[in-house]
Length: 446
Image (cartoon, rainbow, N blue to C red; front, side, top):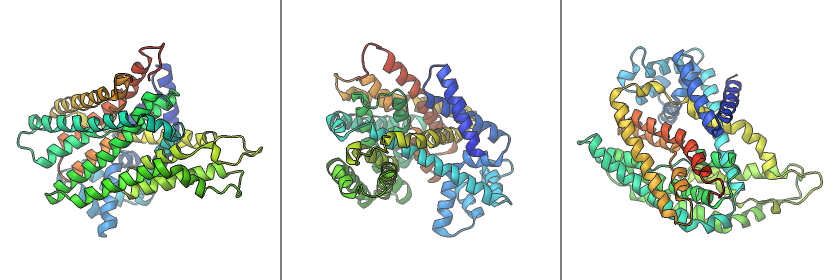
């Protein structure tokens, strides 16, 4: 029934978005925020679990790595003040240790799994609409946008940290800068897919820059986590992630098509080969990307990038394309991702007066930093659309914020401000991109 509720919310959200002439992904996000907070305010256990899903993941990671009890895991993640009567930590403790705990945990895990499948399938579909040749054509521009898209917000984040907290630690300054430098490819990719403009040159630059941005962001994350936990740089970890990332993407770009030809066997199960091979390739490269420290969606995008209809033996009984076969899966799972992401936004975190000013300041810096990165895409490209396309932080920004909070680098107020920034940049990007794309109806955005 939870899946039914989420799908219904996604359908209604998309319908309202179309009426208001807004991107459908915006409708899904807002629908998630609304139903998530209503359920949370009525103290419905599953909604509380979803609202705190990132912390639940951390709790079970601690439990699995150390063998402590669920109660001890909750106390490890939440502060004593959050475990008092009526506070979120105490509510979650009651849910995870209560009579119906196994049911709620399984429900939460299922929603988390379906959500993960949704974003993987979406990026695989985006990759199918792209080609390696197109990515190579925009490689220089994408690299420049990515480098400055990380460097500018990082510097601005460090600068503004001195104004926010004069006596803050170097860990805080670097973590805030790293959080502002992150980019979420999922929101932008979904929007351009809805607009049927994945193959536009400007879109290729944005997607290429987002992939490179993800790699640089993870290296930054490794650096700031090392500083926060050990008080020193873990150069070996940084070097390992850098080398493996370059090797992975280099192998995909230069040997990916050969990999498909070597592993695809057309004589087995020709009726279902397109669907089964495509899914296996997407999941396999997602796993490889995850194992080397990259986001799994980078692997899914790479899988779509190297796959082509020409590799499959044509059969008179199978006229459907790869996209035709994957589209129904995307229609079911991808909306779950965006609705679930909206359901994890707690609106009550923005009721604190201090958090409002911090939120506005951090959000302004976050938007400005990415907009400026579009300048380096070259005069021949739509620099404004490219800059806007790099603005959303989405799930990537939330991951940075949650890690910062779990390490004690971010206070509750700073965390609320960062979450506000993530929400605003995620929600305004579809609106601004649609305006930017349509501001000159007679021309393509590229």
